[in-house]
Length: 285
Image 1 (cartoon, rainbow, N blue to C red):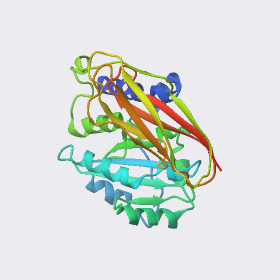
Image 2: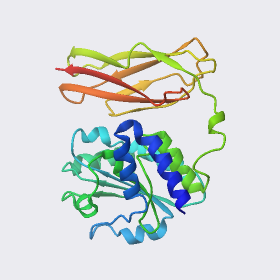
Image 3: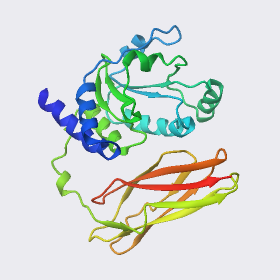
């Protein structure tokens, strides 16, 4: 059991280390993996009944700090949960706990996207207080066992590598593939990792491009591009990019409101320095 836990800590550390201080991540993982998550007493949701039906559950807490719409994407949650549920013969639940005053607005988004998994509106922030959650958002999403204990940490919607790890746990597969070192990798170069769109009318969408040149000897394959906000979308090549050629990532930003912005897009590919984080900033007036 200890060997499995050490392997899980190592895997999660590798997946999350690019987002924060490595020492902080390792310590938090050691503290939280295996911990029991507590749920507030609530008349509208019976957590015990839900977990009786589930073998595993993905539980994610989202607070109202910052751009709430950037954090919540019901359509993406539906896609990811469908993939996790198709991973094997296990029953996988999903529970989103939202600390936000915009209940009517969120409910309309749920109806529009036909989102049917349970959602708990925690206006008093009871869940966070009860569990004394870490301040970093990366530690607010968990894969829980039937007895409410954390078996993995990380948001599978924002990080496809976390999704793959969840799938392995659900399927009972080894956390580390023996063939990982044999996987085809290449190298890429970029002129820049940050671009400014300058000033523009906030009602008008703006476009820009990043170019990833395949400088290695193997084809470049872009597996996924995850943006930090729904207002930033990315089109990227689905086919392998041959050595010496460029992958053109076309980014479109459509502001919801006027103001300065600084958004990120994380590129997951078979390059040695993957994931690659790109940033787009500007001032929508």
